Amino acid sequence: MKRQGRNQGRQAGGAAVEFALVLPLLLFIIFSTIEFSLALYDKAVITNAAREAARAGVVVRTNRLTEDQIEAVATSYMTNRLISFGSGTPTVNASNSAGVPGANLTVTVEYPYNGLALGPLLSALTGPITLSSTATMINE
Image (cartoon, rainbow, N blue to C red; front, side):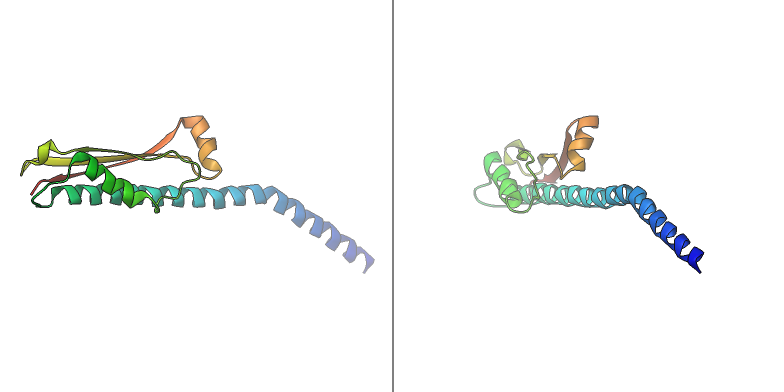
């Protein structure tokens, strides 16, 4: 009976050692999932911003939007939607071909992504991570 108690104590110590070995891997997987989810969310936001700005620029109006106004549409869309942890500001570039019907309007949005913890580590290895999106629509 005494011997059984000793083995249980050793097994409990073994479980603690196994947990200490597996915990860093488990935390890495959890934080990687969170980082990837945040990057996908920000990518969806800049994609929608480019699409919204392009749509605002191609609709028929008496006074078409200028390139600066189209860029302002994308910027205002992203204002409170991006999840930025000290990331830089997004840059928006619109080329409208003077608003001629049938011509293309292209809106490009670029956003430097930093992330929480793994983003800066990955950036140190691969260089800065830039999310970009381009929307092209035909002027009506």
